[in-house]
Amino acid sequence: MPPLLLLPLLFQLPANQTFSPVDSKEFQAEIHRIEQLQETAGDKSTVLYALARTWAAGGQYQKAMDTLNKSAALNVGLDPSNDKIFAKMSEAAEYKALLTKIRTDTPPIVNSRLAFTIQEQGLSPEGIAYDPSRNRFYLGSTTKHKIIECTSTGACRDFATEVGEVLGLKIHNGTLWAASTTNLFRFSIPSGKLIHKYTGGRLFNDLAIDKQGDVFVTDTQAAAVYWIPHATDRLQLLNPALKVEAANGIALSDDGRKLYVAGFPEGITVVDLRSGKFHPISHPADLCLATIDGLAFFKGSLIAIQNGIMTHRVARYNLTPDLNAIASFEVLERRNPLFDGPTTGAIANGAFYFMANTNDHPIKILKLNL
Image (tube, rainbow, N blue to C red; front, side, top):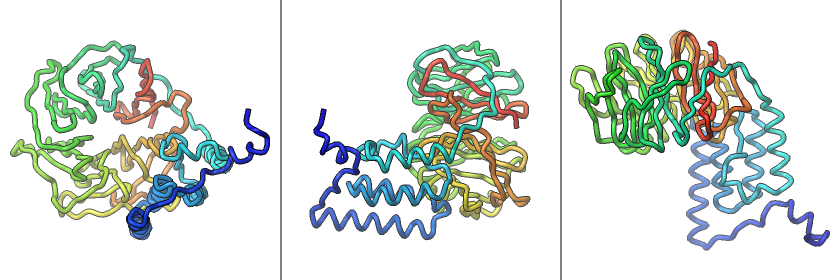
């Protein structure tokens, strides 16, 4: 047991690290870059959190703590509790008090019910898609490098194997599209026969498909959006000028005119597919668009799963009539006790089905009526 005189020190922030002159110059340049980014970014609260992470990464713990306090004061749902970059601060009383405040400000909201479970172990699924013609769900495994097909009662079979680390999945006209790091796969349903494999990405993440069959896919490492026009069936950049850092979730409006791409630091970028113009989505000041994984369009709104540095939640972003901005939002699900890494979801029969615990077993698929 440590001496009583030392106990108060154990609950203080660690002493700041020191830099060499060269490292100090580089670190201050990075701090300045992020501070400037905060002035222009579409999602300023996320950039403020990124500033706190940078202070912590540089061992400037009091600055990190002060910035986290500013972030928490916004009450937008940012939560550092699962962020390993703050690990050295975790025993400090000030940091613990901050986490308590965040949990108090973001109490659980549970509106979903358990739809079915998947018993197979070790899947670590990321993407999910729904086939209305056969009432089947498809999940991609990041660890077993396969895609499984499941009934609404949880009876599953292997659909496709040896397809790499499967991320996004989408279905269109009897075919299943799968994003798998550097490849895109297109399979026939229900046979699982490979129709075509497209290569050329750095980290293909998620997909959206319009009614004509044009496919849009995010590439996280390339900060880009690719597309495969149905007329040419060839993979190409959608717009070389369109750069979306950490591009992830993607969705299309029902009329096929607007494309929504989640990323950092803009939160969501809106692309007008007719004009080619794009812009950060405007949104209420108390809405944080950080770490959006799953993204779906539903009746003039966007349904988003936020994880990572956010309090894990499902939110609905109600769009303006022109579909260019977020008018209001509501949190549909938050801090569900079943949550352990929620990632993506799929619209099925007017409800949102999503995986609650991709890091656990058995996998629980929740149904959230919309």
